[in-house]
Length: 284
Image (tube, rainbow, N blue to C red; front, side, top):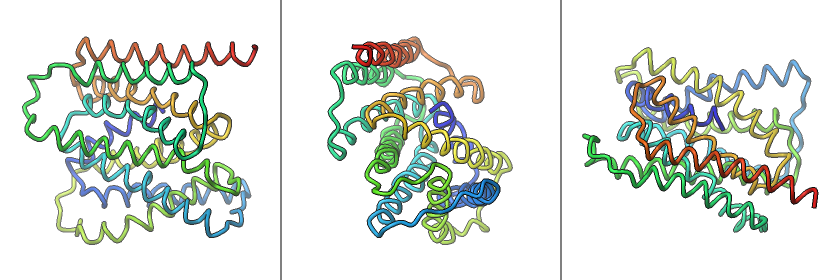
């Protein structure tokens, strides 16, 4: 989730120098061969999948791989990285809601309270007064695009629980990037990127996005998600806004307000509380 937070900064840089679908296709064009190489080196096979599982994987790739990336980059062209970091903090709440509605999970009361605390932390940041935002007339659209990306990411995370066949993380990551490339390449061609000015910073941001959040992030997430419930995985996504805001300051030089620091503290308290109560519930 820390590397997920870094996608906000990478997307901010990318949005200034590449069209959204072109950047998305480039991301997967770099990552897909990396996963194929890892599968060849490890000798990992692609499992046999039924039509239902393939449909779920296509939906997962369309929502999370392509939808999240394009909407995030588009939104980042209209809002700041710090503000986007705040918005992605709604991911644990959205993901938990999807887990309960679609997966039929019944989380413990302590887990629900922890998710609410994480949401309260995000809310304390989101409602801050921000008169210094000179792009306020565009912030509503930008924030809406970021939130739409979060909904896509929530579906991406939890649709994996609906698969009938257990797919190893490496194979699943390879499938996701391959499908993401297939779904984004045609829209990218229609953007005619060869007629668009491209900056080297944007290209390097996509390279980072492909190698770190995509290659490393897919492997880490799927390996971890297989060990916990969907609701617990949803809570740990609260780390994403923390890393996003910190990186917005360190990399982009943005200013963090006191309300943002309060929100981050609430998020960390929620995660610590979940871990503590989780141990007590298991021991009890």
